[in-house]
Length: 229
Length: 219
Image 1 (tube, rainbow over the protein chains, first blue to last red):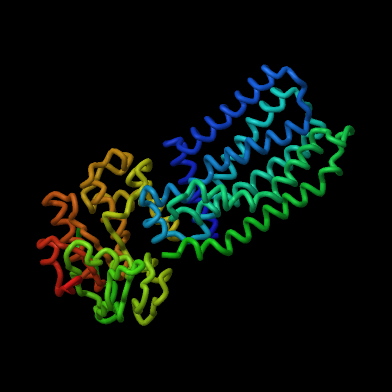
Image 2: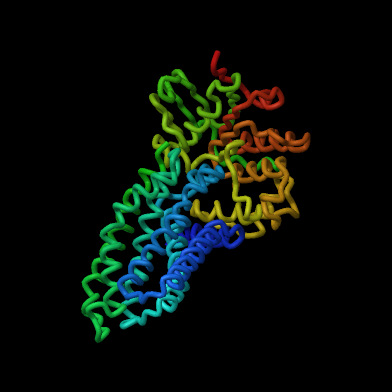
């Protein structure tokens, strides 16, 4: 119970700090709005029809790069501001990770909740199975948040943080992104005109397993990263 | 700051450093530091800039791994050789330690107490702030604090509820006015009265005077 209370305190602090400073929020929002505007402009100039497959790819391009922009700073900012010392002195590595992961997942889910309908309506793509799309988005966001939170801890004390973050995260996220794009295709009706859940079930299972493995591995390894000095 | 009742009996708190070395690549910062100190003592760590005072304090705190050597903190018969166990038993203040500027002073104390597995009421947080001269400023964001007030908040963070058997103070009077300097003296006296041990890294003659003995680095 104490572990949950400590992790929740970190989550609460992350949300409160973000609400007051809006560092990640503004960079994530700026990137998302910028990307949506560019996609809209490209479609307006091109005037061509856009298929659901393009929409599925664009959703995950948007979520991946927005996550790389905003979520990767979770631990980096603690090192840069000097607050990592006080945190390291008082908190357990696993509770810090869990609190930061929960805050990152919340931010990415909120972005997905707002950006996906906007993108789909911009591309005039209909959703064949909204429940499948919600499952794929939720599990994909959780997996991405877990990986970016862990890699943020890994690169926090490195010199070339930005480059390292993307270089470490992308290979780890390839299996998740393959399942996420495939599942989103199914939810948008690609090869699934009836809008059934079954064609995307395998992808949902892969995404759920990936999220569980990413969270478990992070909780097992974070102490080695956090306590290293 | 009122000296509290003794928390530890003589000899219950002991710190032993044996051949502690720290190198960054080819550059050696600490070359085999050994020390034995007991509860109730105040040990000043002195030396010129770059002599490794802050590094030594960080190693003792469990925030930095020594290249060689051993650090052992014993409290009432229970040993704490590994860094994580030591971190839970020290109060630490250093110019390198920052608290969250977007949170208030009170929120900072409450947050760090909670993640350390303790419960801190608002009243107790206010009392701790008042003890370092920050009464009435607990609800202000730390970003609005002066550097002296931030240093006082660091002292409140280090002091906690007076439960740390080992107090590690790295240049504690930095940016403090005369009353603040007196506060450092009171904090050290309080720790001594409780039977706890204090390690004080400093070059300030006023702080050196608080020590019962000194170890000189870089000599």
